[in-house]
Amino acid sequence: FSSNVSASLLVIMVSFHGSFDVHAWSIIFIFSICCSWLLLLALLVIINQFGCKSSTFAKMKCIVKIYSISSLFCFLFANIFNLLYTYYVKLPHNDDTINAYTKSFWGLYNTFWSLGYTFTYLLWYQRINDTFKDSVHSLQKTTNIIFYFLLFLYIITQQFNTIIWEIFVFSNGKMTWKQFNDI
Image (cartoon, helix red, strand yellow):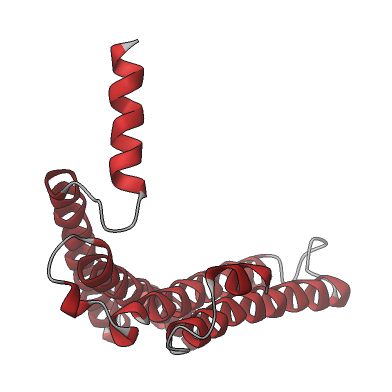
């Protein structure tokens, strides 16, 4: 019983705006910073390897290299903006740091995160297309149309989330949470 109560209290402490437990979030921040460094390292290694003239990387299509680098770049910046948003808006400290610009970090996070996934989906699809290009399992035109249509819908819905958030943030209190949630 007591473990359920303490778990419930932890969820309550972490879930409400402005009432995060700094000690619990320190671990999350350290992990997130380590992930950012790992993403940066991976990005630098991949850029270096793609520049090499070795036979393995020379055979790769340029578009595959672009999708790989772009997805890592977007995930890195998404992680950075998520850290900034959480630090300036969610953690308890001086309320002078909570303003429209710091709240808008979530929109930047969402944009980069969704673009990171978009490039990952494009990379995945390109590799499948290249793998089965000259076989009986090659992707049909209908499959291409459906894939790109669904990817387009994904991008549009995510960018609408960002746009609506930015409108809410920069409306200077003219839009309520209810109006925001009803959109």
